[in-house]
Length: 433
Image (cartoon, rainbow, N blue to C red):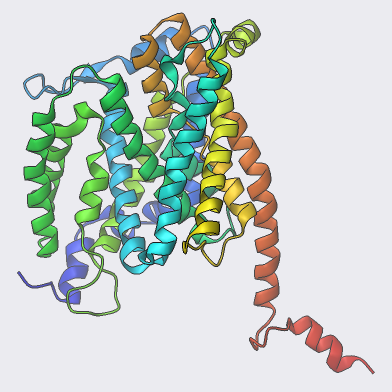
């Protein structure tokens, strides 16, 4: 099937589409808007979970809906984490593929850095956790808890922090976080899952392959693509794999006619991003961030536990050392290159941001120690504390860098004749007697 003409394509995406051209959709596409909505939803959940009405918050998350026949009678919390978040991962997959095909990551020397950074960002926290739990009162079962980065929270915090930071920093973080998430899924499958069903993963190949064939042939009918996407997610949701990333990578980036206009990946990203930023991610954050601390006594009791110390140290120190250190080593001893727009202090700030761990970290904690146990309660507090500290430290570093880049932008904007000398200096020189 040939690619639609430009007018056909425009009608295809704008035909009654509220998401395509409405003012509300444009507001939701802004990175800052999505980040603020996520943080607001997380704050509401955290406050609710620490009031006398906390039981109602947890009861809400355990309300089950969905067809039993398809094994999809899931709690609202599970729908948010596995279902709605798949929309976010689909958008992330689209964005990453565009970077790999037509952006900075098309250069293997630059693409290698965030991939290796993700590996280093998992190894170092695990080592720190183990060191903190070698004594008789420690427990090595939770070694993988601080290895995970919560991509939705990390990207949202960066969006709120950044107004002038280089776009390459977000691409680096997004790539690192997606690789980190995929590696965490493998860790769960091999070390924390006793009953894996590979048949469902094999079955998922069929709808994913059909989805890929349709989008590669530029067949864009929503009534074909949405059922296939849902079928793919249905097959793999129990394993923890985010099929959205896989589906996003199947969408073509370049136009078939070789033109310079946006391809299907950019169109779909433009269309789906408001749903991701305005609905999927905030609801996910609402159900993920509700951790009951138990007041000051609960906080002190939790952080005095070697398990908690290992988690906090792993998220705050391990992620920073692992991500920044592995990136520097690879760039120092190989031909891998850091993005020209970035400096190493930017990478350190981004490495701190990778210490935000929520969903996967909490899931591993439940698998390692059992849901509702005393150790699991300590894990939840430690993950929350470590994530907040990591976010605050990253904010300090990246806000300082943001001011630097803002001043540079202001200087460049005053250089209207593009000769490298700000016009204010030229005017001073011309008027100087």
